[in-house]
Image 1 (cartoon, chains in turn purple, cyan):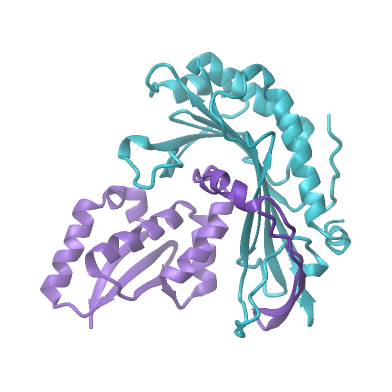
Image 2 (cartoon, rainbow over the protein chains, first blue to last red):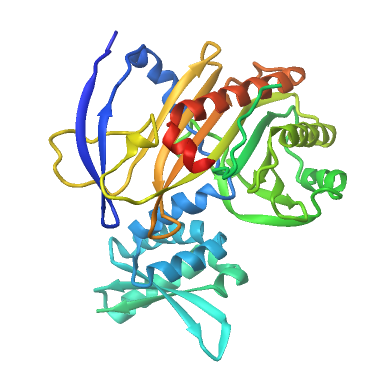
Length: 162
Length: 244
């Protein structure tokens, strides 16, 4: 099937305060429909890059978490790359136990000891204190990443019943 | 050897060559240690990646047995590394990229050493991936088409403004044994004065046992040429000015 066609459009893309405009998009033709079944599964699922995952996953983190200190958190996560995939996994693990609740990331530094900087992941929820605590205990017991001392040194998870 | 255009402000942040292997016997946990013994003069710094991933692209539900962790060996300057895991070997170069004339021998040497310690029967996959980050200064009336020849568009019926983009295309080569994957995306900008674009070009050999080890070098040369041509085709002269 030949699906060649020329589409022209203009649209706006806003990043920060600036407007970006795409003016022309030409869709080439091709035997796309014929080939697509062969190629769509082939996307690289192995994360063997040491750089790009940081940028991609940082974008995902901004979607999963509410971060009031956006810039500081970004710098901290770039400096501690291992935390990025763990925070993304944490969102999945927390959602499985607490449901779709707002998750906050906060960065805290001890000014008397600037080397002590830590992320606090706060699970806001409407559960009773006991229920929330039980779910939090379950998370710590069953999710092995938080048994790692180097992670615990940098991230604390807590819940806040509203 | 292909001729590569060298930019003064090279946008390349990482180049990766990944091999996945088929072994006759079950993977041996001592392989990373044996490989380290062979390459420790060049890559003395050991690290362990915390994240796990699956080598099985086709299986939606990941089996724990398919997960692999990567052991990393960095050079002293920390701008090149080798990663090894279950049936996988990667050679990575970070910024500043030393160019193909240095990267290719590094890839081939790491492959040779891995084959000596692990004795794989064949190749399951090869991937050569170039990750570029291009910072474009923000200005009024910015047009993506001024800098790139490849980008997605928004359907006309959607009036709201975009605040990012991410598009990937797959192009088959060599009767679909190989696939070129081209991706453009916006990244978290380095600063408020610019927009950061990812332009990733990746060439993959995806058919297991189709490429003998002896033809790896030729495949790498071809892949590098295609990646280079694709990159040049994807950017405009305005973009080249930024890189020079």
